[in-house]
Length: 545
Image (cartoon, rainbow, N blue to C red):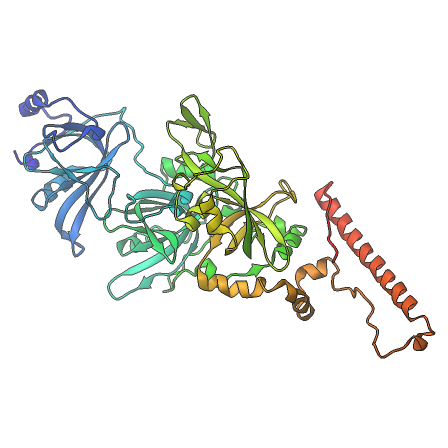
């Protein structure tokens, strides 16, 4: 029986429907499907339905594709060949529930896999489909990945397509190429982790058509079935041919839930006035025009009002001279959000997600001490940065010879990759609430592109023997703040004699230097008092040469 004649609605009174239902085998879950089970039947909801078009012509469909999900949330891909595509497209609707019966299973060798399932379904003319009512069937139809998880993807070719949701914080213009067009946008999640997304072809028009210039609101975008791509060592995402979908500022439960999560975030509130430029230009990569500061300058900025601004993060170029752990060099993280979980019996509880899970992932959490020509600082790097640097997940690290509870014992593989390596770090200033001199800086992003690192290393990692001459030619911000530009010793021409100064040359020099030191200490004490007023009972240690 052809597929065009066997799709029944729940209200159908056709006697053949009852007969077929009696003949149908017991329903099985998607996880139980296997090529050897040729009479399987499944109860599913259609999450995504789309046609593969020939040269973009909607009148010539090469095949009809569906992404199906069962009651357990497990997804599998289903394909209808060209001779069945038109009929299936007219009758199968997204969001509806169906019983699928009499189909074949084939290995999932798709170039861009829409699911992680080992197999995919191939429908034939003998396949049977029944539309059913299932009010209690799960409505959750998304497979979200956090931006931290995306940044840690090791092999972009092996990853199945996934969904993302976030706030658009930056947008490029439409790039018209000879055979296609593109648009780049930068998205941030509620944790201010970011990822760059490239929209291609029809998704550019789909995105621009949803922009209302008369409405000022935080631009929330949801992209279904995007794929990871690698661009200059950075993991980005991209739309994927016909399967992706781009939704902007829709009134849907999932978007309203995200809107509630970012409610009150001042940083995102300012982005409500973001304008989308239609000019043909690429979005500038942040690392292309970096403003890098010395560690000492960043330390000084924490005492000023600048650290109360919305974007209080700065780039530092430094060399790693030590690697250490807080308690251990790893922690058990939630598979959804990556936050730390608590083991309860044989399950793991995530306080951020408010959910239990049977599994958790080992994730990196290691401190490094970084030095430049001005000072040194301790920085805390999390899983995303270590995966980018090591090219491995925490559970793949060789821990031979490492004591499980020895916080001082870092795996050799980590030390070898980090020690004496020059890296650009984007660090977050420590605010009033958590400011402590003994606490590390949180690293938001790193840059290891050789040409960019070398450019700034030449400026910030010159020999310590040259520091004095460098400072003589160009005073830094920290020099002014700590009164280092005050003359530290009297300059007396060597040619002058004691007689010219009444025979008391050494005494005059000594008394003059004592006066200078007294004046310098007064300046430092005034600075310390102003800091104590701003920060409370905070002791500022100023080192003198």
